[in-house]
Length: 247
Image (cartoon, rainbow, N blue to C red; front, side):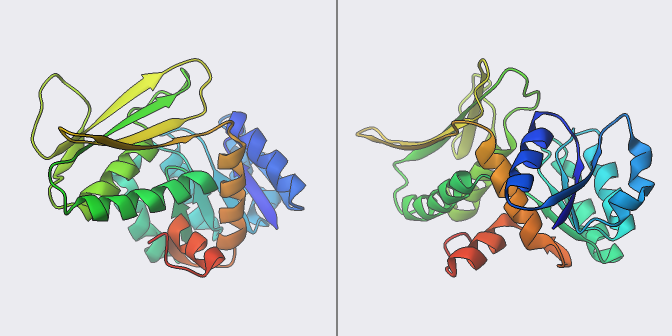
């Protein structure tokens, strides 16, 4: 598989290492200092691109992939107000796009459990959900894209949950609060808590390194290559497991 890397920071380098370990080829590494390489033969000859850049550059990077007819796996967060726009452009251009807040295999299993638990808890209104996410001090956006995805999954499964917000000192019935912490070099910890007057149910995913994110992104690229349209990691994991756990 010939993979173009867009964004060559810590994640880009880790994705490169994982791709090479799996026998894939990295055709080019495009960052802010070599944008002209979007016109290079190496980029145009790629089977798929993996985009991990910044919220300010993600949309333009995806559009370059659409223009070149190259499927793109995007893991950049903080720009999703334009996600619907990118889905439309994907269809209009005949492109292929997969976006996720987190590609980690473990996190996607965690998300499947979150959806299942939220469906159960919708029958027990005495429990109120909340989320706490912890990441390294270099992560600028908050709450994390993963935490927002988890909250949206709960909202979709439980009619009592009407939305989410970050804590501001006021409590609103039906509004799930997402708290964030920034500590050291923590790769990512997400805890979902369902609290009642008599007990508390919680589950946590704690990443030990960024390697899990990189592996999931490369798996997504290998799966997306040759496909068209908008896709999600849930489709890929359902395909891998031959089950419907991830929808």
